[in-house]
Length: 154
Image (cartoon, rainbow, N blue to C red):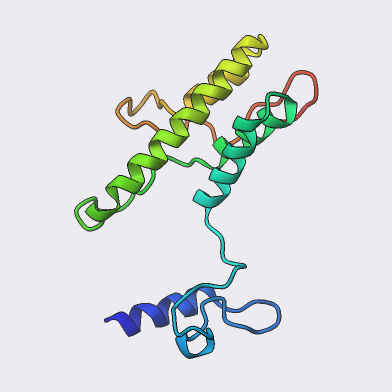
């Protein structure tokens, strides 16, 4: 079973422009451990980096980073999978939900304080969908609003 999953993962990720596998064979890693190439990223890591930047800066660039982090959110993490099958992931899902809620709160507060009520509502809707109030991270809109002054996301 493990070998077939590893093989499918390797095929799915493919190769980089130099022809090297993005999920190399274990004997090609140097330390005999499975590890994807550094070129393989995930949206959670991107969200975390943007959130860290945005939460650490209280300027337009910080707001822009928070908006970009929220633009990654496409719904509650792992909502499309059988929760019983990935019950082990629930602590990570809750960490993600909490981080998203923190970014939503911070950006909506900043936008409200700047009298950008559209931006505040957009951030708030990243957490609360009118259709599913129980989902913390269901997106209503897939793109951030344009800033009134600069024509780009908050």
